[in-house]
Image (cartoon, rainbow, N blue to C red):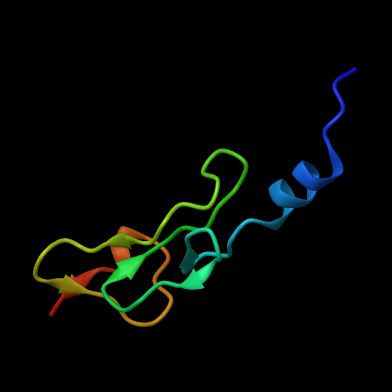
Length: 68
């Protein structure tokens, strides 16, 4: 049976909440978004909205990017 090291188990459980990203789970700045992290995404950075769009606080998907 495969056993996961305790430190790895803690990392996988932690992740970032939606609206937060990067290795320290910081709040995404206005104009970017993050769906959060799980075992497959492993703490992605916040993604920028397309040019000419922005977000309100704690955007969680590209659908939250609206025209300025």
